[in-house]
Length: 79
Image (cartoon, rainbow, N blue to C red; front, side, top):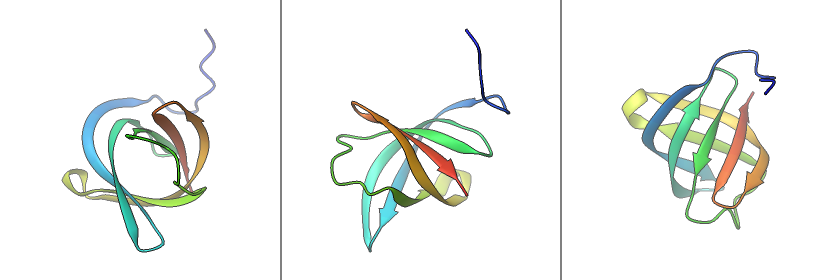
């Protein structure tokens, strides 16, 4: 299988928050690179295209865009 990523993914299992419009939704960060992340959520319904991902235990706070959605997982590309 061809991996089109420019950087290898770092598999993680960390609690995070998807922030948008003054609201926040809990998520689990499943993998991350400098370019983006895969997040697991209870439901992707209502999460807008543009978000900020906050992961306090990693001191990570990044603005990004949702590039794919599949069942309870979403892919985020950081800008």
